[in-house]
Length: 427
Image (cartoon, rainbow, N blue to C red):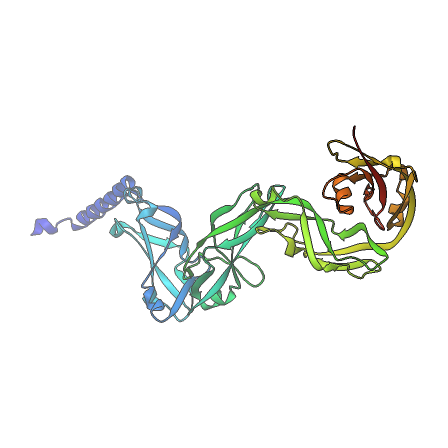
């Protein structure tokens, strides 16, 4: 016993020295170091405790991501860890009155050998509010520049409603749901799936990726009609006749005089004009110009539309009417010929009594002034000789027969003019 207790001071010093040496050796071989990991995600646990109350929560300020996590542990442990070994959770059961949840951070291996873990932030901040939902009509728009000679026709979506749910404040802020399709360079119909975008009342895009926001559909099929365009003139059909002593001048002013029409290529290719018939273009009894406003859309062929969004489809029309004048022209019988023949007979205009006939023409002054008497000619049909003289067949003799005149457009004969025709039997 005496030997054990002898020199106890020396023995204690030796023990302390041995401990110090062990500590130095272990730290030299496997020292405690630190490693820093960034942007570590935090998992929310027991979120159903909120949703079961008819509420939803959203994470504020990105607090469900820890900007940095620093782990202190021996080098051997540190070398065996990676960021995937860090498990950070926030349990809703620990929700505070300030709507914050403390973060628990551990590693899924060697946790008992870790000295400490230091977080840059230790709480997740939540916004908790009532859950709401609403349905919105879907609208569709196009962007970009379509190819020259084409326009956008009907734009439709295969579903016309979207239902959203989430935090009441978010749902109440949604004013519009819309999709947009880029049509740049297209020349044929488009069918594509487009993402649905939500907007607030100011037209700002809302973030639908935030926690607690749900949409029953996120994309929708959009069908866009691409129509070919073509400028065509507008032609008008005038009804009725002006009052006695008046006539259509033939001049019609239309604003516009041509329109841009759009439709399928097969329809547009065969369209040469827009032909308009309208009851307001009836000039019956008029002694002056007719003015009218015409709805041109009634004349559009099936499958076509106006190609200019700024054109409302109406045209202003003026139909010009002028007074009729008359003038008599002396036409040589040499300008009158026989149309037709009969075997065994010679038929000719008889000029033994007179060598010219009087022709009274009526028309607008401008048309009458343009008449050149030397350009007027006439014919007598053999069939008219028989009809006018009650003949069953041609026989020798002298007869009267009406002249069919060749006169300029815009003038007409005031009354019929006849001439003597002689029929001789050939020897």
